[in-house]
Length: 290
Ligand SMILES: Nc1ncnc2c1ncn2[C@@H]1O[C@H](COP(=O)(O)OP(=O)(O)OP(=O)(O)O)[C@@H](O)[C@H]1O
Ligand SMILES: [Mg+2]
Image 1 (cartoon, rainbow, N blue to C red):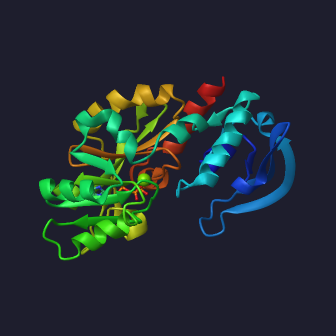
Image 2: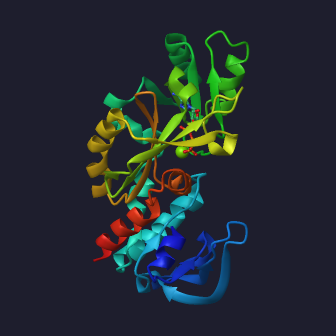
Image 3: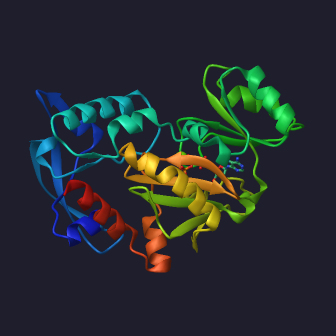
């Protein structure tokens, strides 16, 4: 993304969460980077400037989960920056409102049976009914804190206690989708439009999670008719809320997650298909700023 911006003549600056502050203006200590082609040694840092965020053409918020209180604080600052005239993507309000796991609830016609609860009894009832179940924390990424549990698993109670921290943390329970064997499909939406290739993330042998961070293999594939159907229903709504970049996760025919914090897979798709996802993103961004 940064390389694509540089290629078009944009100056690229980077600020971490701790480099953003409010004192009348919402401003940042931002360091200018130049990007190299070398993936091992990929940038040079230049001068650091202190400027209001509204002085930049656009601010791209990209922070991985955990979605914790510091994350929320950053979105408060970015919302105020927006009020002052900064152009922030994804929209800080949408980032706050839109939990990556729970937000599938709005689109339940595309999901398998799912539950979000804190009470362990509710989670247990769901497992009794649906047998093999996936339990996930609401605030994670990269497959952390995700369990597959069978109704007759000898560790079932312990898993429920662990993932819900003894009923003090909200958990999503979801019916297990066996098509995960063929991988989960990361389908990207850029300003509501589907990227024509998805990335199938195929779990490594003996692993149930299709996250690249959990050793899965990423294979680019054309998007399917079902992917287009889901994308056409969600795309315009999500784009209308200021979600310029969204990473849907589809397993088999079913939507399992809507990633908005820092969707990836641009590189894998570009390298394997030649389709320049970052250029599509920059086109959409420049259109929003025009
Ligand atoms: N309902 C399900 N059925 C089968 N496997 C599932 C299901 N839900 C999640 N998984 C497995 O867990 C993995 C991670 O799930 P999910 O994408 O929801 O979480 P994540 O940690 O936020 O991932 P990411 O960082 O890629 O957004 C999936 O790749 C898949 O292997
Ligand atoms: Mg996620």
